[in-house]
Length: 307
Ligand code: NAP
Image 1: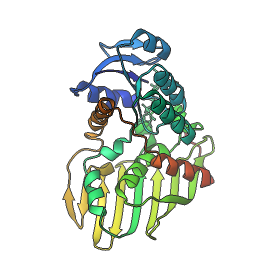
Image 2 (image 1 turned 180 degrees about the vertical axis):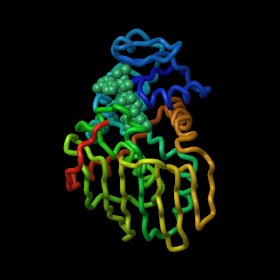
Image 3 (image 1 turned 30 degrees about the vertical axis):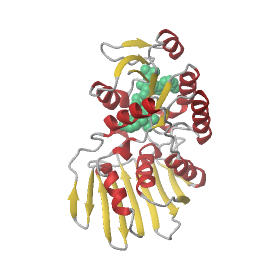
């Protein structure tokens, strides 16, 4: 199937282009980007022109930051294209509901991707937790913003999510592996004096069966990056390491993939399945937790951030 990639920036180049190139399902037929290009692929700088000129391309994958994404997604749906959305699927929950409704109305597929859910050991962790009583779950997500978002001003602007941009990856795993839904009860947000979004966050959640659930996100991590989830149950402990690529249960380690390994090929395989079957996949639970933490969180001014 022919696909167009929109927003040729860091994640498009690092993950989407190689995943599409290695897939038997997809043919990268066009890009839409004001500055970015992909060698050998027809380039448009205007979305409307691509949609009008390339009526043979039925699927569009959006790799833009969250704030501009809604307009691009709505244009694609209005032009009868199936849509794949990078995470988070929009800047607000209402936008995401509007996109889902538009897709449903038009009989098109729309996919809110959560790449971290496709890390190697997430499905195994979900299976292991399914029949156990959770006592506690702790998320520690600490990385270096300069390494993953070099020069990206949008992450510090309203709607950019700040440290919730990676943190939402942890929330996507937690909402996938826990049998029960959680919700935010309170949060503290470290907001640099010159930014609109947090660089650090500590969040507490309500668990319907009384487990202690909490998360720490930090973007000021030098050296090793930490993407860990620790769950303690009535019959043992589970650790997810490297963003879900590695699992340890009571000291026994499984999984040897690198962080992010295999995630994007699985997203594109899922999109191919949705398009073929005419399905919609818009789980907004990670986004709800992130936006609730931003709504409830107590802001603590902190040192200015300079890239
Ligand atoms: P990015 O490189 O800053 O942006 C991607 C591209 O979007 C830019 O190159 C730009 O292309 C286009 N763009 C930016 N602002 C725009 C605007 N206002 N209107 C239209 N186009 C605009 O960001 P990224 O790191 O790739 O992240 C994009 C999305 O992927 C985010 O939602 C992020 O959460 C997600 N993601 C990122 C990573 C990561 O490690 N960076 C990992 C997983 C997921 P042109 O200027 O050429 O139009």
